[in-house]
Length: 341
Image: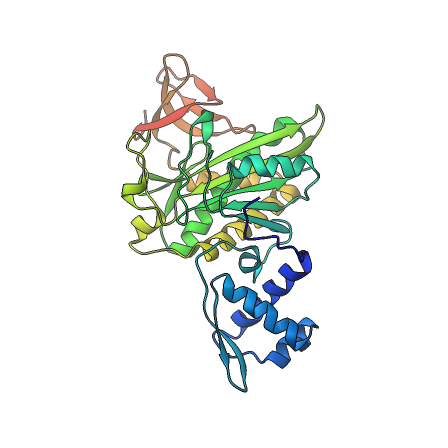
């Protein structure tokens, strides 16, 4: 695999790298002495120096201050597990983080890992993908160095027919992370597109492996356009697209965004496991771009038109048609066409 981690020395090395970065950030640009690092990490001064040297080769600007110690001047915008984990406040999501410079698809890799027994909360992140995929078999454009492509392994204690409820977990978490890190006001278009100013900024693809009575694993696939520029978008997009950088008018640091996303996913998932679908459904409805709106749904024969009244226990979209009947929509493309019938 082509990845930033793991390195041959294994998990111990990654943990020390992460702890060093956490100590630097706790000092907020201040100097940390080699003696303090040695004591707090329970390694030799020589080992500290070797880890500092390794971090510098990865692009971290670490200054050696004579007779005082080391200071973190700046961090690179590359996706490294130790940097993402540093200061990450989660209980489940992010228990293991694997980063690739390039891979075919994070969902494909996560599925393989899940089948091999990877723990719940494992996160697979790629800087670029060669076979990124979206809903309904569509391709997801995945240029390097600008966006987030990730997949999360979950093993929820639910029956398979409840799994569609978790379709909304990723979308709500992405929306929360966008608002927290950029100040933008996102909205969600059913089932799981995240919009900013009416343009698509993120999409999700969940894939499940299950037996009759239980879910083996669920893969949450998430793609977020973070720093993509307009000339990087394909000309034949089905829906107007944008990025956080375009909408915010500035470059967005990817690693703080990833941390915010993983923390929101963790909080929402733990709430779902403890309290059920209700709170997640309410969070989705509060962020919905389609509630009360007239929409058309393609992929349903001749198409359906109706006013969105909500989502049901299985995640189906509820449409009130002009003749008064309510239709359940399980799949299709939604287009907003008005303010209500």
